[in-house]
Image 1 (spheres, helix red, strand yellow):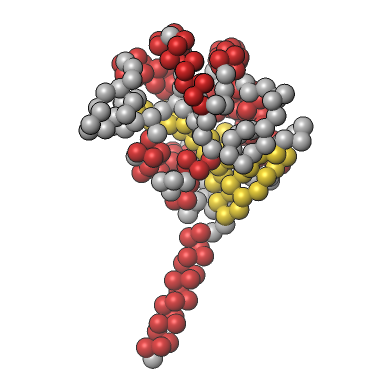
Image 2: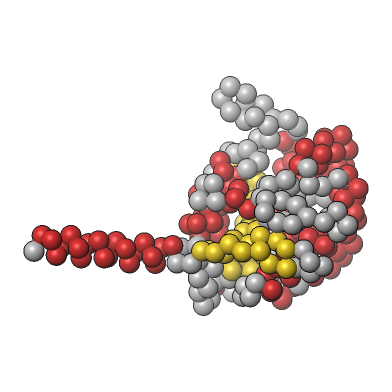
Length: 274
């Protein structure tokens, strides 16, 4: 009897494990011009829930969403996607392909469609990829269920802090150049006229410390009041917004992963109530 009980428990545990992991697969997908991008798909599509698409900050690959198990936990309840932009992680690179916002948004769109990832999409975007999410929403408005901005960049960052700080950040990322940023800035200002996010539910998660931000080195690298003002500008892009400022550094998904997970789950509820 004890042997049977142990075997039964093992079978139940195995079943639960298979359900919890659901589906996980990485592959490389052609997004055009022979450029293959790596995509990491986890979970299964659930009726009434959008596919969650994670996009990383400058210089990062898709694993930044998995280090603190953000993608894995959300994949327990719906289909999720993270990916490497061109030149990051395991994705191909091509110096002849532009690195502007429109190109990044169209590459992501091609990746999702060529990989047969169903929409609508809930975009979860860190740092500079917040601009790409806004571009994606302007280009493909019918395919975006919502956006979660994780301490995302606003185009007025240069006006607030000057060129030197941003120029240095871009160079350190080894992904974007100052010329790339100037094009990204111009594009998003042109797209602003569409007011694409006005009726899209968004969540803005803002950090309050940018620097080492620990007990030994509590100081920020720059004026946090200005950063808060930029975060308010992102929040003002939609009439359906939840804005939360967290006691965290720039990488909220690593420092406060449950805040990101909670915001995604709360967004599911908001979307279903529309």
